[in-house]
Image 1: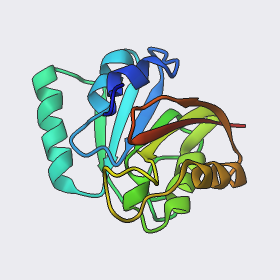
Image 2 (image 1 turned 60 degrees about the vertical axis):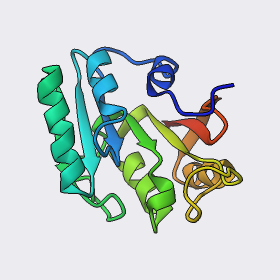
Image 3 (image 1 turned 30 degrees about the vertical axis):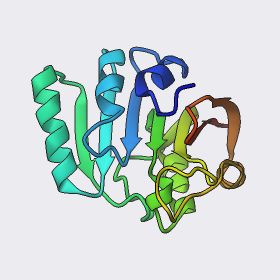
Length: 174
């Protein structure tokens, strides 16, 4: 049994197309951004984070990997319009291990719905509420995420396996 999250395995399971425009919310130093950029050779990837330091570290990796299809944005995803991206703009959004850190979890999911194109997908990964690993506070259950997503017009497409400590939910905008 695999206990930890494997970003490359997850990316292979979500049906990427080379020309997609995608974003990672709370990208930090680029857990998914780098892999996405390599897969989306004809597309574009946005790395969004509230902190400047991880975004700088990410851009260092981008230069090292010689990738030209990544742009970073420092922003607050809990604010209305916080991503600064336009409405109906992205094909795919990844929200990995972000919700447990958010005070307003619904606002983060609402922002993803706003900037997602019709039929676009949002992948939410977070710590299982009953997991002994990860943060002690702030966890949100998969059921709570499903309820919020449904309220915002996102339909659950599939649940993926992500090891012992995480759940992975793939939603689509109607």
